[in-house]
Length: 258
Image 1: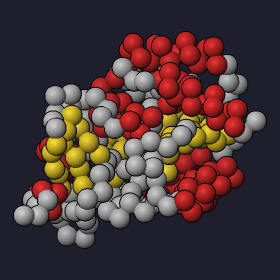
Image 2 (image 1 turned 90 degrees about the vertical axis):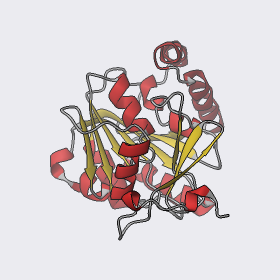
Image 3 (image 1 turned 180 degrees about the vertical axis):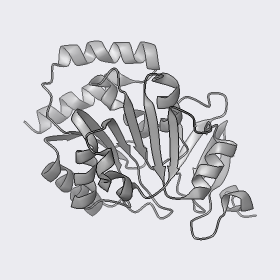
């Protein structure tokens, strides 16, 4: 019998894009794009929580920005980040660009993604078009980038043009978090390109099947670790995210790259 992720539901299999499929294990629903690669996950008993550790780490920007007004997600995945930001930051507008209509459809049907409203705007579009649109430049506090296709060999968009567009979308104190997953050559290429574009780029040790989460600043902040640990405690209390581990990781990175 084939694995459950191979069962294709025609609602989530529009031609021209990989089909979106699921399987479930131990109370967790996993998203796939017609292959065994996990594209996202949701614990059925906690549909608005962030299940995967690397996806939690994409929220590292909360150490530096407490009151975002505009959050943009490139790549919907299982909608974990989009839902979390929409629910937990009621003062913010949340925009997501997702190219595959099957992903949007399955997230609405099976992953609890709300319909668009005055604060939530999930768009079927290419992330490159979004970041190159001058109308989006200088508008975004937080940009979360998690762009993978069904092969998951590395980010779908990794060019200088793309990361320059990401940089240009940010406000002066804006931050990008990005998941860099794939071959070693993919890591090196992405990190080098980000370093060419952003004022400061740091990354945490890899977690969850070689995902590395990068924090890229439009303008480098002053790092005060006592304040960051204090902020991490607030994030733990209010958002239930393991932010102390992020600060530990940043401290380790600073020591290794001094």
